[in-house]
Image (cartoon, rainbow, N blue to C red; front, side, top):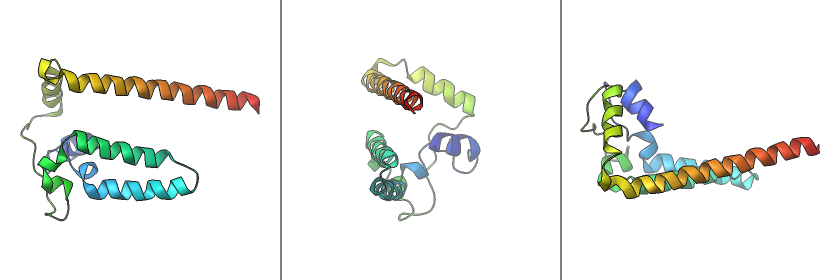
Length: 134
């Protein structure tokens, strides 16, 4: 959410991929909405809120308190050190992905992607079973 918004749509003004969705406020609002829906028997948003908090911790956002505690420490967001067009930014990110120092990060990302694909497949197959059962 933050990358397209901050790096593409608001590139001239914000120019950062860590903005609104990386704030404590966003996480708390998402968690509250998720808890409300959970009490209504719909746990999906609460799961997304938990994943959002995990993502914030994985990004070590505490190193950017002006982002994490937005808007308490001001209304602005710090600009990224990478100031390039979207294509140039994408090329920088792709070139960093082959750095052996980032290997442990990408292993966990691949495992997460596999889990998402498997759970999505299970969800779709169960939905099809319910359609044919009715």
